[in-house]
Length: 405
Ligand code: FES
Ligand SMILES: [Fe+2]
Image 1 (spheres, rainbow, N blue to C red):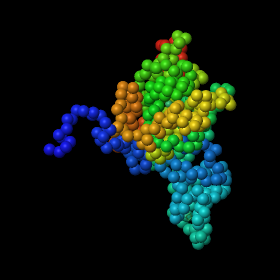
Image 2 (cartoon, rainbow, N blue to C red):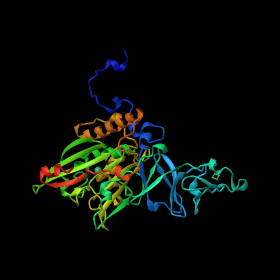
Image 3 (cartoon, rainbow, N blue to C red):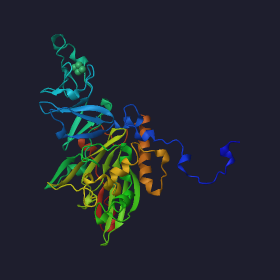
Image 4 (cartoon, rainbow, N blue to C red):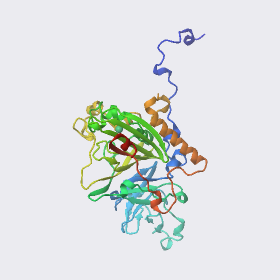
């Protein structure tokens, strides 16, 4: 009999020592080419930069773990190519942008925005059979000043989806692209995209993290504990957050996620009653880096509001203020670079997170069965792919507002 089995078994159980080896759910967090989730993500268009980021200076960008170079050729066309030159692999970060494309610094091969080799200056007659040499490239779409790319199988490239809230723009309003992330402007958030994205189906954290723990960061309408329900939709999952306001009106707030990484969240500052005025995407930059890109509609020139941390902006906080007044950044990065799903103890308020994970896994199964994932359309007519947003802040008579979202 060894020492362990001689001792009583039921004292002080539940210590960390008893945990099994922790692990992440790899099917949810992978982003790389060839992995099931990475292939699912590669069936959609993703925003990754502002149109203004494409210039005559090669700019390194990373999308789904792939190192790429963004540039704009002399005729104004944006291009996105692998950062490694297809000749002998130096980085096109050191290239020069010219009228017709980007020229590698090492041996001067010139590539156009679709990776076609136009010149090989060290080869006889400036290169023969140029068509045999192609720099890996990806297609781009500029949508409202945001650049989107598609990294999946070329023959399965979907029609570019559009959204009614961004297309129907009233007089005096404008549509702008915004790469303001949670955390520091421009910097990726150092954690996996999935834990960032599933937060959208976790409305209860608003009541604690944003409306009490770190002060009330939004507005009075958002402060009380809502009655929450979650619902599967044809393209994803949505949540209803219902509150009786002090003035007797009913506040029906609807938040949506569309597969795999679209987030439609009405403004938590509730400036406008009705349908949400923005659409955002949670971009997996790599397995451990994430960035949120937003396209929003607003009255022309109106400043965008940000959460308040005791009257300061997040980026103005000292390290000790970050500890005392955490926000989404701290909560999500605090889960680790990739959260450990094996150590979670989910409760009833996590139902939306569970539903989103379930929906994501259903998509993986569809892919494995050779089917198209949801919300993918090959109809060349963009109108066919236009999405009608349900998310919003609906305020008024109870029955009337519930019918709207
Ligand atoms: S490595 Fe790019 S031209 Fe040789
Ligand atoms: Fe949040």
